[in-house]
Image (cartoon, rainbow, N blue to C red; front, side, top):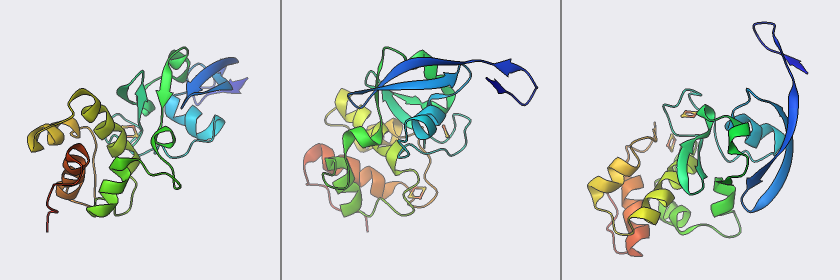
Length: 170
Ligand code: FES
Ligand code: FES
């Protein structure tokens, strides 16, 4: 049992979450968001916490293939759904093509926004494999980046979609 900031008690319950093709038993109170459970209970820290208020996209994951801000989604509601985090798309030994393109185009600086960007870009390319520049911009409009100015990220996503024919933004 935990006691929240208002002093009310809440019981932890046990349930399973399906993440990146694996089943994880978790024990958490019903008010825990998916972001916190992924990072703290399951140990998948690739998903980042930025604003914690559904504004920045750093916490983006896929739920049954749809991008969702995990800071604003209750973990218990994700039972029975397929959750994909950045760790489910690529890793240091085998980068996802979007990760390779982001590196090639200089679309990664501090890297804090990168997992969420890749999740959103992946979802975009799943529904539109040949997006225009404007469509990429719209597809990433829920993801904030303080470092890159966005152009190199958009180049990278276009490059990933076209397998390497996009000229880098100077
Ligand atoms: S941490 Fe979830 S949108 Fe910013
Ligand atoms: S690379 Fe730093 S916030 Fe995007």
